[in-house]
Length: 164
Image (cartoon, rainbow, N blue to C red; front, side, top):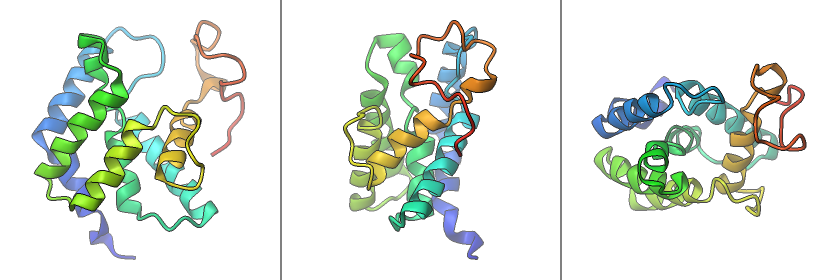
């Protein structure tokens, strides 16, 4: 296994714009009782996405999956502050971060599209858009959440068992 294969992921994690957005999300969600949009969530999404990718034989690179997952909710603070839907804000912020981190144009377009569509339940299940959508939902452990009864997710949407 090539341990250097995730260098671009490290660039994202160390990017000042990324760190600033994470801090803003943390402040906005300081008193949030429901699921948070933090590193734990981002990494859970990445890991589930990667498992889906392997199980489905999609051949999407691990690095692209992790980068898209780390960035998919990075604009969440804009939804709290300015009422901008977070998938739009996240795709805008992600594009800037990806450019700063030296990603190729094609990579940027694939990642930004997946981020902008990660809330679209009509995504194909056979591409990054689809597995990011599914992993985002599957990452929530509703079965062990103290707030599950008060959560506004419908019962059908809640994860009542371990799936991934």
